[in-house]
Figure 1 (spheres, rainbow, N blue to C red):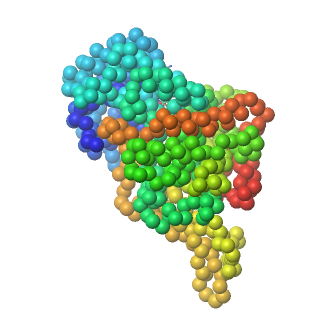
Figure 2 (cartoon, rainbow, N blue to C red):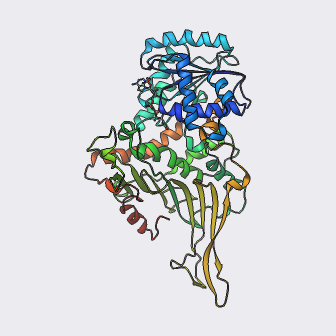
Figure 3 (cartoon, rainbow, N blue to C red):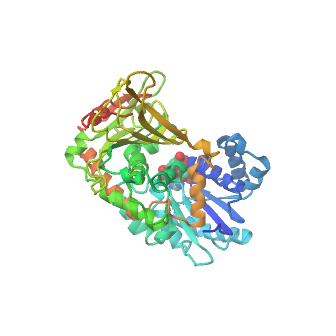
Length: 493
Ligand code: NDP
């Protein structure tokens, strides 16, 4: 797929945090890499009033704040911000779209974009349904084939539960855009190391024969961060960790770890296999929800605030900032292999990794020098930080006697040279521009994921007695999540 020659990217929510922290730096980096269309402009849209000049100055400042020093190039930044335009309107008011249409046509004539528009929805999720409808009302959804392609990118969360996701898909989007015009973004899939899991599994022959219930004991997936909710308390308090992280990012990691080899690496084959994993998740019974899900909320510790003291958070909030759960996949490959997943805020460190725990040897022939005497192999896929892969295996301790200990074979992606870009948005925005939806979530996958997780949300809502365990900020979450794993005789690494 080739880079288009012309395009206007219309960002709804252009005065917001995502635009300044992620979208603008990613667009600038694409510009620096000469990957933007030749005729290109951004039309930022939000209610705040700015002139084009004010908006450019603001973005210029923010690029200096959010880009790495080595990426800053003053003359490039100046020419980049000159491609930015701003239009003040309320995206929740249908009448304002009557003014957006001529504004776009004016810009279209100026830069000869050929009416190729890429809409990016970086607004509160409550507007995700109405914007496509209001675009349709004024004909801005019409895709005219060779001339005037229209695509729409939607941020997470796509829906609040199964019903709202179905409504978004079947009512608001289906009516205005075709599935191939819709890009539901999940920035985890834009990460180089997440894509590399597929290379590890499907470009090597040694892993696939053992990648199943006969050889794997359990799988552990962790994606935690050492920050609290920062400035996003209001959004987070309405959302919670299950919706914000588990239903989308963590389950994507489960899917990539568990999926069958796709027939090809293309949008249909890859996304078919992802959807099949979601559809095979073993439905959770009420007993599972009691015993195999732990939710927590960080409380104040030393110099760190508790969640309930954060700005815009309800002081009596029961919103979870931590979730650990045990999942099963009911298919031939994975039946009876537990997947333990956990994610949380205000943990001791920021780390995302997948650990494949192989079964131990059937019999231990040697003494072990380590206290815990590990005999089982582990494959650790580190997504963040220090992207890489570690294989742990057991070797003889040098010297007399025959003691063994576990050692590690450690591969770091840095050894391949610098990664093209650390930011997933660079890759994903480029994919939207060229129209490659492979790494974007398809409607059936979104629905299958919500079908699995909505009963958990309903269960929590109807069972207020289910605890939200407090954990001191800066620790590894509630101790109850350890107990959940001990049932299987294992522990978090
Ligand atoms: P912000 O609240 O910072 O920005 C939201 C934008 O929408 C602003 O430009 C604001 O502009 C506009 N807006 C806010 N309220 C309304 C309203 N009631 N009606 C119309 N416009 C409104 O949010 P973020 O930028 O943080 O997030 C945007 C979306 O991206 C959210 O859905 C979030 O879930 C998602 N997201 C954000 C990430 C991040 O790191 N920030 C990461 C992943 C996803 P104005 O007030 O000028 O109209």
